[in-house]
Amino acid sequence: MSKTSGNAMTVIKCEPVLDINDVADLKAHLLEALQSSKSIEINAGEVDRIDAAALQLFFAFVREAKQADIQVNWVSCSTAFEQSASLLGMREQMGLS
Image (tube, rainbow, N blue to C red; front, side, top):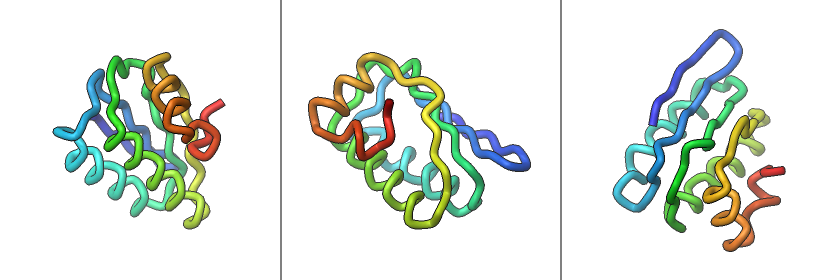
């Protein structure tokens, strides 16, 4: 997971594997992004595998960002990421197109 911040936006680039082992690190990055109060861009285009724990964290993150009036843009999502979100019924609520 990598994170970069510009003047107006925070960019989060996801690792190929996001599972229960990565959730603590992912949560720290997502919380830091929320605290910046900048628009957030998430690149999940290289995700090969994601489990329910990581998807639930993204789901909660998107919900918190909406409540804080922070825009979240998904610039790229892999097929694996989108299929997993769809399987759990989270695709629409997460703002995936």
